[in-house]
Every structure is written in C-alpha cells, then in structure tokens.
Image 1 (tube, rainbow, N blue to C red):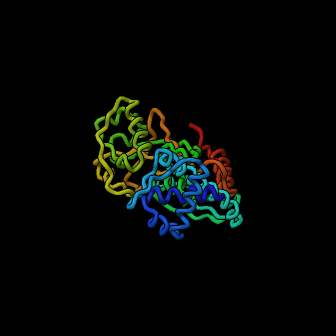
Image 2 (cartoon, helix red, strand yellow):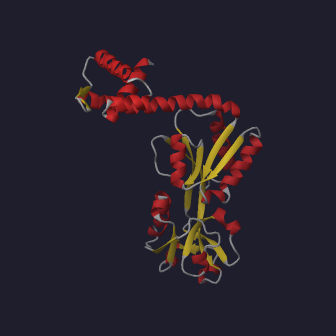
Image 3 (tube, helix red, strand yellow):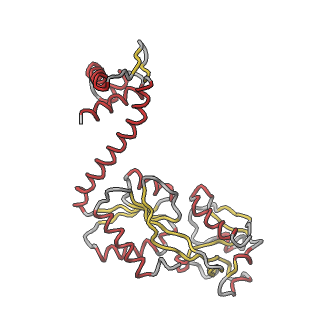
Length: 300
C-alpha cells in the first residue's frame, strides 16, 4: 500500500504545482513529502517532476502518471467504499432516491413490498430530481435510485422495473375526453406541456418520440413548476400533457386521463452501482423483480 500512498503524494504535488501547498494539503512535513517523491522516482526509474525555485511541473512521464494515477486512486476509493459497505450492511440500512413521477404508484408499491419481505431493513427515502439521483448513486450518497429514462452512466447499472403505459391528460371539457383512448395524431395542433429538456433529457426525448412516430411535431409549453398537482395549464385549457398511468389516482375531477393509441410505454429504472453490491441493495433488486412480476409492470 506504500505505492498507493506515494502515488497520492505525487498527485497532490502535481495538482498544486508546489511542494509547500501539497504538504499542507496532505498534513505532512515538506521534507518528508520531498523524500517520498524522490523514492517514487527512484522506484520507477524516471523523473516525474521538473522542479524550479518557484514551481513544479510534471514531465511527460509525470503527466501520464497523473492521468492514469488519478483513475487508479478513484477506483481504489470506490473499492474501499464498496468493501466497507458490506460491513455497513450489518446495519440493514438502505437509502433510496426517487423522482416525483415514480412516487405516484411505483415507489410506494415497491417500498411496501420491501417492508413486507424484509421488515428488518431500515429504508430512508429522498425525493430528488433525476440528475441528483444519478449523481447520488454514482458517488455513493444513495444506494439506489428509482427514475424514468435515466442517461447511460458507465458506473451505474440500469434495471428496468416498469414499462408504464402513457396517456394524455385533458380537461374534462375537451372534445377528446369522451373517447376511451386518444390517437396521437389527433393531438396535432395541441400545445404539449413538458418539463424543460435539461430536467431529464431521456424522458423529454421519449415523449417527443411518441409524437414523432405519429408524424406530429407539437408546440411545446414548458412547465414553470417542477411539481404541480393541479396541472394548472391543462386545467385552464392551455395545453395537454402526457403522463404515465400511475398518476391517474391523484387527478382532480376537472381532468381526465386517456391512454394513447398506438399504445406507448416509458421505462422506469432502478439505478445501482456496478460490481460489488451491498446485501441490502441485492434485496431491493430481488424485491423489485418480484414486484414487477406480480404487478404486471413489464407487460408492454
């Protein structure tokens, strides 16, 4: 492990471009730091740093070690965190982030099944934007996240837990509200209420793909609120909106939801970190698979 420690010392000097600042950052004496760097250079048989009176610059070899060494140290940190996670699993605790849309029916059903199957498991939930859930699972702040259409992320595993049928939300007085289902093509000319793309690019693109498949290019009205239980612009007749079927139960009486035709679904995923998984996360994934089967969530 002395090699890894010396590598971290080198990275601090290379990043700070100064031995004094690096020593302060590492909380060690400057002579000791200089000695460790010399030992690393002797061990590798190459000069890593060009030293001047006022600054330090990595050599070509030093820049290579800086680039690859940073990756190695980050991987080592992930390894220690994952291994410690097994010890922490003795606490039987799990932190789950979920987005607003998954909180209508999917998250509650999954949490109820988890509590039934594993009553000893202490679960902490956090309602968060999709981007924050992705970063939280990536950096270990969250054990798992439940989201729609997450972006591909190398460090994360995406597990589909639900293919949620989509429908259109309309004022009850709308001419299409009397139909059992609504043709996507019949929505041409309607304004479509959507979250800004940056809130969740995957979900935004999936919604527009539904319309593009019917040859429709809707005029967009961006939501001003991240959550609006009254769906105010729709209730006022200013726009229509595409929602998953799990949102139907909480709708006010002035609005109706009708399934789209052709039938369309959007994926809901559980996000977990790759490689080693804590036992609590493995229990969550098993419970999610069992719940998806029993609830019929994966039937397109």
